[in-house]
Amino acid sequence: MEENKSKKQTKISELRQDIVTGDWVVIALGRGKRPGEFVKKREAYPPLLDKCPFCFPEETGQEKDVLVFRRSDGDWSLRVMPNKYPAFSRNQPVKNFEEGPYFGMSGVGYHEVIITRDHLRQIAVLDPIEVAEIVDAYQDRYINLMSKKSVNYIEIFHNHGREAGASIEHPHSQLMAIPVVSPGIQLELDGAEIYHKSNRKCAFCSIAGWEIEKKKRLIFENDNFLAFCPYSSRAAFEVWVMPKAHKPYFERITNEEKIDLGEALQKSIGAVFKTLEDPAYNFYIHTSPCDGKDYPHYHWHIEILPHTAIWAGFELSTGIEISTIEPEKAAEELRRNV
Image 1: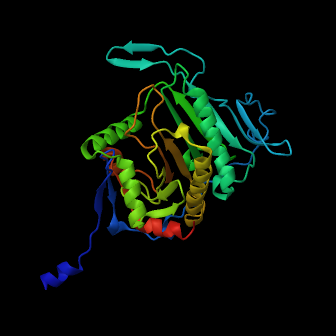
Image 2: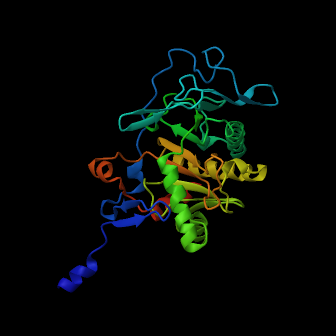
Image 3: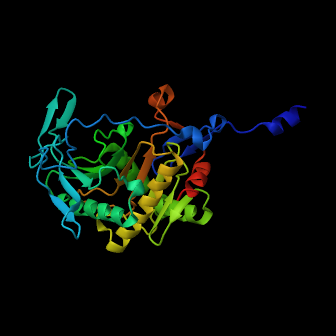
C-alpha cells in the first residue's frame, strides 16, 4: 500500500540554479498554474490632460533631439532626446566623497529616451524591420556615449505598462550611461569568467547550444539569434534573446544582425503579448562594460521579464524567486503564438 502511494507522489517543486550567477530559483510545480491564470489586466493610464510629451516633444518642453530618424515623407519615425527628468547629470566630472564608514560619488552620467512615432503601436505589433530601427538607435547612442569620461557602463531598457514602471503610455525605451558597473552585471561577468576558466568555453554559448539542440525551451530562432525561456527562469514566461555566435559586445552588432535581432525581439515580445494578453513587462540589454577592460568570456543578451507575480516575504528575505509554471510549459505556450 505504501509502495503504491509513493508511486503516485509527484514532485511539488524544483530548485534550479543559474550556471552563470549561481542564483537559485524555485519552480513550484505543486502550485503550477495554467497559462490563462497568468493573464492580468494592466492598469489603465489616466487620460492625458494635455498633449502627449512624446507625440509633440517640441510643444511640451522636451529637449532637443540627439538623434532622429525620418521617413520618406519627412515625418520622424524615431527620435532620441535627453530625459526631461534625468536620474543623472550630464557633462559633469565624477566626484567621490566619504561620510564616516560610507562611500559615494556624484550622480553623473547620461539619461536619454528612445521614442517611436506611434502613440499606440508598441513593439509587440511593430514590423520586425521597425524594431531593427530601434536596435539601430540603441547602437548609435551607445557608441556615442561609451567613450565619455564619466561612463563605464550603459544600460538600455524598456518598460511597458504602469506596473513595469512606464509613467508615460507612449512606447519608449531608456538609456542610462553611468560611472559604475552594477552588482548584477558584475555577478554575471564574474560567473562567466569562472565558468570559462573551469570549462574552457563560454557559459552562454553552452546554454545556447543546449537550447537549440533540445528545443524544449526554444521559442524562436533565425540565422543569428535564438529566443528561449531560461532553465532557471526567475519569472513565469521569462524570455532571453541571445546571439548564436559568441559576442561579448552589443555595440559591435552588424547591420545583418540588427535585422535578425529586430525579428527575434519582435517575435518574442509578440508571443508574450498574445499569450498573456498584453502584460506589463520589462526588457533590458546585458552587455560587457565600456570601462576599457576586455571581457572575452562574456556574451551579451536581452532579458524579457513579464510582470506575472508580486514578490512576497520568501522572495524578499532570501532573494530566491518563485515561478509557478515550468519554463518548458511556458515555452510551449509561447511557441504557439510566435
